Length: 294
Ligand code: GUN
Image 1 (tube, rainbow, N blue to C red):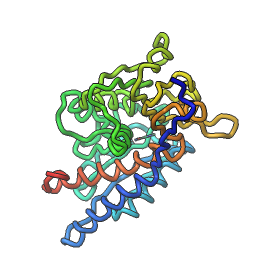
Image 2: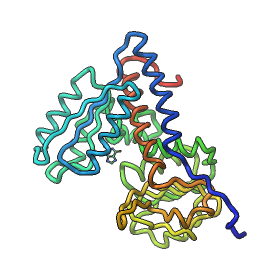
Image 3: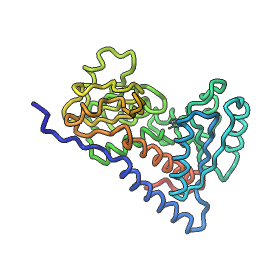
Image 4: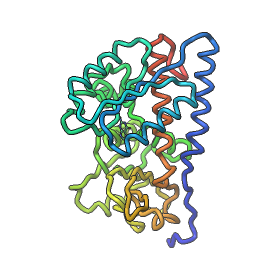
């Protein structure tokens, strides 16, 4: 059937994020009104990666607006792995710190896995420690990575059916691709994980009821690959000729997709929101409060 007359829902990630952040802020305000200290997130940046500094500013701003206190730790580009590990150790031991986020990428001389493994899993608000990643794999509760949680929030909010749906994930990173595939599987989707070596990507994408593009490859997914009515989640943030584009050709997919997230203002604001939620969850668990919704 010709799809020219179709309308795509373009996800307003900022509006959804604002709504969820107000709920988080209300929950924090209630805890503080009851005489408790606010939750606290420590953010650790090593070096001067330009995008990282701007992401971190956004994280601190969102914490402040939600009433969550945040600490900024900035080590120089030439810091040694020992210095980073010493700081992580101090934050692990600090009882007033609930969440620790080590901004990635780290400078070359620092082994990211070693640093992430040094974080107390109860404070690992990125959900990247092997204890939390393993618990996700095993279907046990734990802290989950923020972007995959944000993706599920978008899909749920727009009532995208996942049970029995074919979800195609392009990308296999530990930060997004692998965990989102597991979360979708947990929700009874049939999941295909694709990557740079996948043969005939177009044919697989054409089968997708839900497409998650997190390959970091500008405009990889063409408009005519999209199954009519599919939910298209684009995590790509790529600069091409001074313009930000996603991994999906948004303009070409518009009209065919049932729902689509833009590269700017799509899932991004939800990632920070889920960081706030994870920090609050870590706080609740560390201070003996029941988990949210329990
Ligand atoms: N760099 C880009 N995205 C992320 C993220 O979600 N967490 C961390 N720690 N670093 C990042």
